[in-house]
Each structure stands twice: as structure tokens, then as C-alpha cells.
Length: 170
Image (cartoon, rainbow, N blue to C red):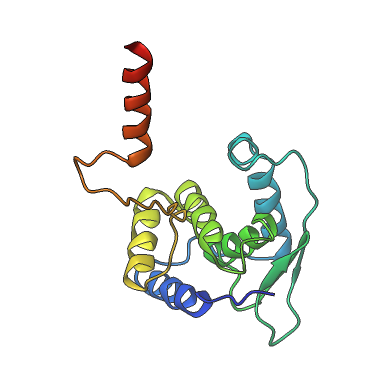
């Protein structure tokens, strides 16, 4: 399995966000969290944005002393972190592609979209700033392009093609 190389950077950025922006809504019970998750996942916005038709998510409190975690249709929330930011973070783990290791770019992009939808654009912009400051990669990978020719130079294959075209026209 590949290494989750930006996990700690993301946690640090998220902690800065929590400290300076807040954590969103505080849930009173695990049932409140389950209802929030259900309403979000079955909203037209979520289904259209993330191409989800239906799913089942088992939401419970994590065992005492354990961190929140999620995956494969299960979400376990730490009793001391029953807030909207924590729930959105764990929800992304359920829907992000298995090829995106832990807290990779796809995770971060989906997380930012959920934060924007549920906490608003100012929250998304501040979290993005925290990501940038913490060197958390959240944009899609750029495709590598190799240019062997300087501006104004014509590639040899194109020159040959032009010469062939001239020769066949004559």
C-alpha cells in the first residue's frame, strides 16, 4: 500500500482551520450525526456532484480513546469531536476512490467541496488557505508536457510533412 504522505500536513492545516474558523455545528448525539449524513448523502446536490445513487452508512461513536475513522460504509466518530468538520472529513473517506491514498488530492478536493456546501464559501476559502500554507496538495495533478522545441521552432516531423506536401503538389 502506498504511503499517505500528506496526512500530517492535512491534520495540521485542519487544526489551524478549527482554531481560527471553528468546527461548524456541534452534534448532540450519534443519531443527529447519522441524520445529518443521511440528509447530505441523499441530497440532489451530493448525488449529482459525486454520482452516488444510494449507499448505507453505519454511524457510531468510536470506542473510548479511539480517533474518528471511516471507510467501507462505516463511520466512527470520536466522542470529543462530534462536530461538522469532523463528520465531513470522515464522510470523504467513505466516498473517495481507493486509488487516492488516505488524504490525497482527490480527498482534499472533495473535502473542500463539502466544506463549501455545508459551512459556506468563506470556510472553503480559509481551509484552502490553510492547505496552501501547510503545503497540502489539493488540486488535480497536472499532466506532464514535454516541449523539446523553443518557441518559433518547427518540429522535424512537421517540416518533413510540409516538404512532402510541397513535393506532391509539384
